[in-house]
Amino acid sequence: MPQPEFQNDVLFLNSFFTAQIKLDADSFSDNEFLKFPQLVIEDAALELVESEASKLYDGILIKNKYKLKKTGEFTLEPKLILGKKIKKLNKFSIYVEPPELSVNTKFKWKIFSDKNKPVLETVKGGRYKIVLFGFFYIPNTKINSIPFWEVNCQPPENSILETCGNENLTYFLFSEQGWKPVGCFYWTPLESGEQRLPSPVLSIPSKNNTVEKTFIPAEKIFVRNTGIVQTDEFLNDEIAKKTLEKTFDGNLDVSENSRQNKNIDFKTLTEKAKLIAELRQQEAKFIFPMKIKNRRLEIEKELNIIQSFSVTSIVLKKAGLILLFLFIFVICIVFALNKKKKQKSFNFVFTVCIVCVFFLIAVCLYFFINGKYKKAVYVPSSEKKSRFIYQIPEVSGTAAGELKIGETVIIKKQNAFWLYVEKSDKTSGWKDITEFIIID
Image 1 (cartoon, helix red, strand yellow):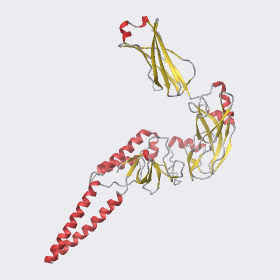
Image 2 (cartoon, one colour):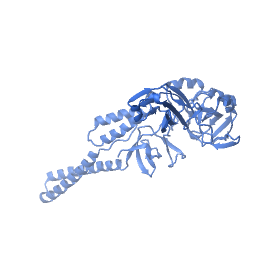
Image 3 (cartoon, one colour):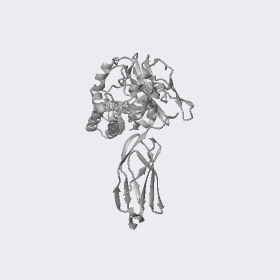
Image 4 (spheres, helix red, strand yellow):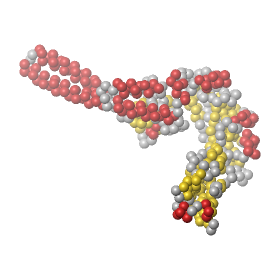
């Protein structure tokens, strides 16, 4: 049985890969030829974009074209479909590199300690090594040229920026598949809150021996006001024990639930957040929803949500209004009868009804105020998205607070793309409308 042929050139992400197989007349019967043979290669790294078969004088040539969607090494298992028969062919491997270096290359900062340990959070006044990584392919013969690229950075506001030697980059050459270190600096934040990392300008060599400059927009991170200075000894202990949470109050208070949640994947957290939204909607439909409420509070506790808004019962709202009108009607009757008979018993009933009416008015006012604004549950669509709320409806705005997955907020106002929300601690700010499930 003939085997598929494929290109041995370097393969890049988002480029195309071609595999083909030539079948002579002896490879299939006339009956199998009626249903044209197919070459099938299924893998998450490949997307079939074109398949063609052409008849040759001595057989058939089948050619498939795939788009490469992932980087890394993949073992492919091709199959040949001949009529009702499926024949497995020899396995073969391909290695997909990141895209070639260009002005469209992706770059990102990573933060480390002086001894190259990953830093999970930053503290005002701490000195950190920040390394700029690019997602691109470069031949092994040029690997040593990476540290000598020209990376220009100006210190961002409220920080000190110092250069570090090119020899620091060699440690990070293989720290993450596909990502290459291109620049290294020492960065000291002088203020707390949301701070900008440097905005580097890179000089990138092109194929025609010219140099092109590319500007990389600034990233933002949250800097603590106070906390334990992250020495390497501290990092070695703490990284193994817990996931540190970003906070706005400056306290290093990481709850037991937060430690337990560090290994729970993002999908599980968002599923629990969706369940909170569903339970809140169910809770509003009953007068005594204790089981539902206890289940909701249990899930909120698992997500480290200590304080939350109460649920207003739709049934109690309606019942309160009905009782209010009923008591007003009774008062009118009692008042009319009291005018005619003037008995003390009527005066007592009248007084009781008046008290009940005022009580019901207070209850109705509470329900009205509490239900004036809609509520929503925060369910982020991506783990990479910022959880901050902003003082203006733009991600470039100043951070006003941070949301927890599954947290319930009050919607104070909204526009086409943003919600202005208030947390249970009275912190308020703008957030993307797509990150919420509106529940009432």
